[in-house]
Length: 124
Image (cartoon, rainbow, N blue to C red; front, side, top):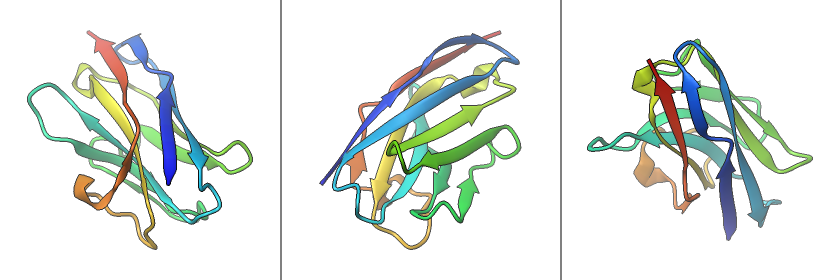
């Protein structure tokens, strides 16, 4: 089992930046693909970004491409999402997810380990 705890959410003005982090504990020696999803009120949980266990491959959702960067710090067992040029449409709860995949699935049902989420609010 692996435990995920997100942090770093908050309120930011449009055009600003925010860095959110996911601390990974438990069976961290396993090869987990990590991903960020987000869910706005009344909407589905959407894929934002993912990174494979070796950090050799990343994938981004359409909304994140060019603005967000996912990375993982194996030494500290963290996955980080750097978000730049934020827009009010980025307002959502951001969830960290993990599962054993060789690829980077983009559907929420592909992941069985989830954090509690961190709220990101972008004001206009």
